[in-house]
Image (spheres, each protein chain N blue to C red):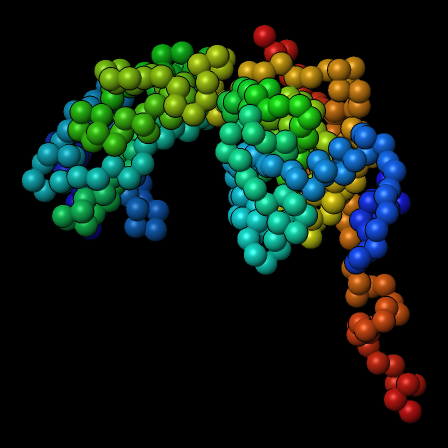
Amino acid sequence: MSAKVVDALKATFGAAILENHAHCGDETVVVEASKWFEIATFLKNDAAMKFDMLTDLCAVDYPDRLPRFEVVIHLYSISLGHRIRVKARVGDEEGDGAEIATVTDLWPGANWFERETYDMNGIVFQGHPDLRRILLYPEFEGFPLRKDYPAARTQPLVAYRTEAEAGLPLEKLAPFREDEGMAFGRRELPTSEPS
Amino acid sequence: MGEVNRSIVLEGNETGFATTKFDSLLNWARKYSLFQYPFITACCGMEFMSLAGPRFDIARFGAEAPRFSPRQSDLLWVVGTISQRQAPALRRIYEQMMEPKWVLAFGTCASCGGFYDNYATVPGIDKIIPTDVYIPGCPPRPEAVIDGLLLLQDKIARGDRTPGIVKPREDVATLGNVNGLVKLEKKSKKAER
C-alpha cells in the first residue's frame, strides 16, 4: 500500500529521492536534506498522501558514514491508513553542519521531538520556535547520543562529596561483573570534574 | 539500650521507677516516631506504596506518617533513580530538613546508580548527601525494606551514624531442619523401603 507513496514521491521529486527500500512491508525513502521541508509539506497536504500523524522523529549517528547523521521521521495517515519512513543525511565527521529544516509548522507535535533530537544528537532544526535542551540541563556540554561522547562521562550539577568529607569509600562496584552488562565500564573512561 | 527500654515499660499494674540517660530516652522516642519524606522518582515507588499500605504496614514501626514538607520530617526516603538533573533538588530537600535527620537509600539505583552507568544518572545518592542505610534490590522486597527500617531504628537507638547495608535474609527452604517448615528435597529410594 505504501509503495504508492514511494512512487508518488519519485514522480514528484525525482532526483531528490536518493534511495528507497522496504523491510517487512515498511517503506523507507532517503531524501535530499535540502528538500526536507518541501517533501514533508507534500506528504502532509497532498490529497493522496494525507500523512496527518507524525509518529516519531529521531536521529541516528553513523560515525563511519558521511554525512554522519540520519534524521528520521515516521509518518502515518489516519485517514488513508498508510505509513512511510523518511530519512535525510546531514553533518560532517565532526558533527558540524548537522542542520535541517523544522517540521513543527506541519505537525506541532514535532516540537518536543526536535528538541529531544537536538538535546541528544545535536541536530539543529532551522526555524524551530524554541530549540533548547528538553531532557538535560543547559550546563551540559556535548550531545550524549553521539557515538564519540564517552559512554561514562558524567557532568554533575552538584559537586560530589569527597571521601574525606564522607568518611567512607564512595566508589562502588558496578552491579554486574566485568563479563556481564555493557562492554564499557565506569573506571576505564575519564570523568569530567564538576565545575 | 534494649535493657533500658525494657526497664522503662512496666508490666500491668506494676509500679516503680526506671533510670536511664536522657539521650537514650530521647533516641528511644525518636526511633518510634520517624516522620518520613518520600522522595520517589522511579519504579521502586510501587514497592514503597505496598510497604506503606496495610499488607506490610510500616505503621507498626512508628514510621507511617509521611510529611510532604521536608521541614517537618526526620527521615528522607530516596526511592528510585536520581538523575544528574534532579541532584540539586535532592540536595536542597536534604538541606531543608531539620536536625536530627536520617537518609535511607531505597533500592539499587539510589544506593549506587544501579545499571544506569551513564551520563544521566548519579551513581549513588551518597555522592551528594550522607546516607544512613542502603537497601539493595531492584526493587527490594518489602521484607528487605522492613529490615532496613529496623536497622535504622537500631542505629538511632545506639546513636550510630555509620552507614549500614541491609543483608539478604537466608532462604528458609535451604536452612534444613527448621521447625514447622517442609524441607524441600527429593525422596531417596532407600527411605521408601
